[in-house]
Structures are given as structure tokens and as C-alpha cells.
Image 1 (tube, rainbow, N blue to C red):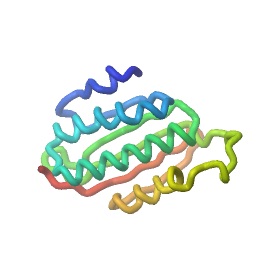
Image 2 (cartoon, rainbow, N blue to C red):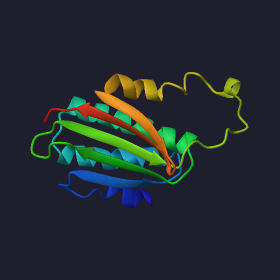
Image 3 (cartoon, rainbow, N blue to C red):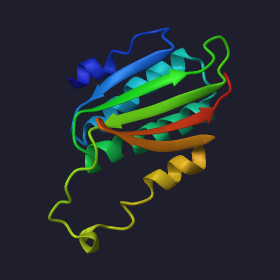
Image 4 (cartoon, helix red, strand yellow):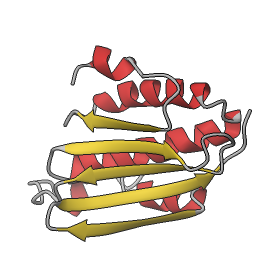
Length: 144
């Protein structure tokens, strides 16, 4: 999927499914597309920012630490109101460790993403099956 395709968000839908390019540079394009969806859903600005941060963390986690392909699913539980927004990222499971040792990673740059998701989400979790791993988070929301 190209950046132009990522930027073309359909309007008015309750669920969006987005294949994720296996490229760390794609995270900003994914955020732009999801921002458009959240605006269309008329979410309160603070809720939209929290959802965008959760999307960024889960997408980055899949791109950096998992095998492709990965898919983002964004849905809302109450299309007439809001209720909750669910962010779900599916990937093919953990990638083999790279040549970088844990000591070579900057602790200021890595390791806090899932803690951020946990702090922002009303509920979150992960499950593995034969097809890979699904990480998800639900955030309560208000309309803007």
C-alpha cells in the first residue's frame, strides 16, 4: 500500500481495515489517515489524540518487532454515539531477534509503547493464534 492510498480514508464507516506497509516510515501516513477517520467520527480532540497515540504505538510495535504482513483495524462500538474506539493490530507473530543486542538499544527510544497503551486504554490485551498475534486496545470516548 502506498502513502497516497493510506491518505485516502473512506468516510462515514464504523470500521476501517488498513494493511500496514512493513516500513517504520509508514507510521506517520497511518496516523494521518486515522486522524481523518477520527475527525469524521467527530471525536473530542483529547480522545482523538489518545487514539492516535495508541495507534502509533501498536503499529510501530508490529512493524519493528513482528513478521509481516500486519493489519490495523479501527472500529467504534456505538456508531450513533461513540461508546468506545477499538484499535487492533494483527501481525504474523514475533520476528527473530536482530543482531542488535539489548544493550545497543537506547532505553529512551524503546520499551515503553505497551505501557503507554495500557495507561491510555480502558481495556487492552493480546492473543496469539496459529496465524499470528493480535494486540488490541479499547478507549472510551466522547464526541467533540
